[in-house]
Image (tube, rainbow, N blue to C red; front, side):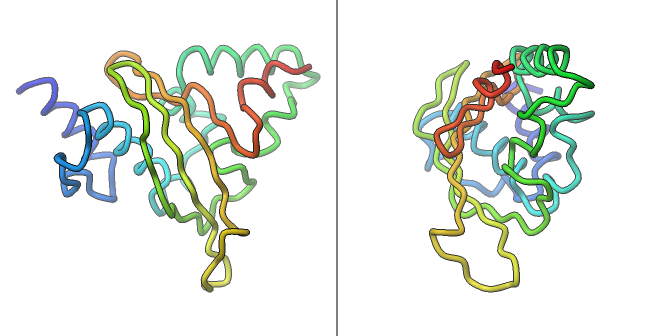
Length: 167
C-alpha cells in the first residue's frame, strides 16, 4: 500500500464529511487536498464538540512548536491559567455546540506548510445567520511526521501564538 493511499485511508477514517468524495482535480496540489480534509474534519458536525483541543487531543491538532508554546504559557502562569486558555482556540468559544463550517479555502499549501481560511458560525436558534454572526479564522499549518498540524490560529487580528507569548 502506498504512503498516499495510507494517508488517504487515515483521513477518510477520521473524516465524517467524506474526503473520499471530494474531487481531487479541484485542488491545485495533494497538500491542498490533505489540508482541506484535515480542516474539514476538525470543523465537521460533532467533531469539535468531542475534541479537547487544549487537553488530550492537543497532540492530534497542534504542532510540536505550538504545544511547547502552550506548555511554556502554562508554566509561566499562576495555577496554569493563562488568558490564551480561556476559550477553545479552534472555535474561539466556550462551547462548540452548533458550530457549522460555512467556507474553507486553502490559498497556500506546500509540502510542509499551509494556510487555510475558515468561516463558521454557530447556527444557534436554527435560523439563518448573516455575516455579522460569522467568525473568520486563519489556520497556519505545518506537516510533522506526515500529518498536518495547526501551528497558529489567527482570529480578529489576534494570533494564538502571540497571546501564548504574553505574560
